[in-house]
Image (tube, rainbow, N blue to C red; front, side):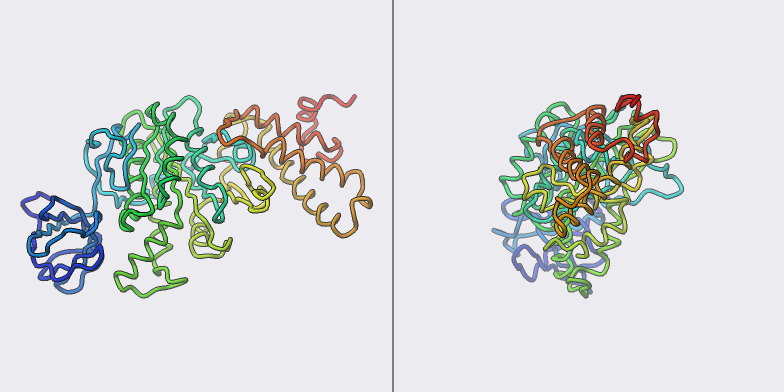
Length: 460
């Protein structure tokens, strides 16, 4: 909208915390972006509620120092917009796109952050891998370009550390690639650690980092993931080259809490656990913005991270996320207590699109069969461990003990990895073979003889 068409009002009837109550308005809508001219400069806001001729505006910079008698509110007639383009790469900004790295403001054509899910008729199925450099993920829950694959955690586990490691290490073979990270509700110390983790990738011009801190406005927390996805869409689909873009959203539970708070401010009728009834559609409007478009070379892959309050996987946020996304990576408090990093529970994790991203011509010909064999062996090892607690290890068969040995080797050889250690795919799959070698060949029934001979040697 042209600035001359903006609606300007001076009738501010109340200032409550971060909220302005503007009266006498007409033609104003929810989520509309607002410019506020006050005595000490210009601020920004978002319309939270409209009732008749009254609009409630949340001021993103807070209302301290605002004099209602000397303030003008401009409703721009559109949701929040940000510039898009390559200028984001290498930059660190807040959730509204304002620089935090001391650089100039990002410039480029402006796009509304509200965006839209990809048209299903224009989608290409996800295909080919995004390799994270984390062995347990690349081997058993391969991330696929265009996929949405969440990480489920509980408070206190290193989910943010793992998300940062993936963002720092992820790559695709031989094609343009970059990462967009939207960090939500972080403490200042967590934000500093994340910036340190991503410094090298940022310096290489392969990263855009949006930081929303715990003491930033809640409305900004709702804008941040939308801004990140808008940036990613332009990098993937808006240029001739087209990039494969990985979008990391952490922590989406903080996003949902902000949505609940804003819903309460709008006096909306609450649903499960006081979240708004549209939580499912709101999350879907974010997650479904990933994918591949027919005829274009780029892709947007989304890795949301969310914490499950009380470890409850039926909590509305993980529950609804599970309906929308294509699998999950589940972190285990038990593994973490044993000092394992990353503490992934592989038997609770899966990537439903793994077969589209792994195998001949994509990773390695032996990838899918050895992954299936390893998961089967780990499942048997868990059963044996439960049995041993009842009858004692002395009553176990030699094969049972071999499965327990395999489970221990799996944790030490494959899962255990440094937080700054990047492993190539060949190294990862060779480690899988070394773990499987703990079992006799007769127990490896899911692997063809040709693969066994090549990797374990000819028994003759």
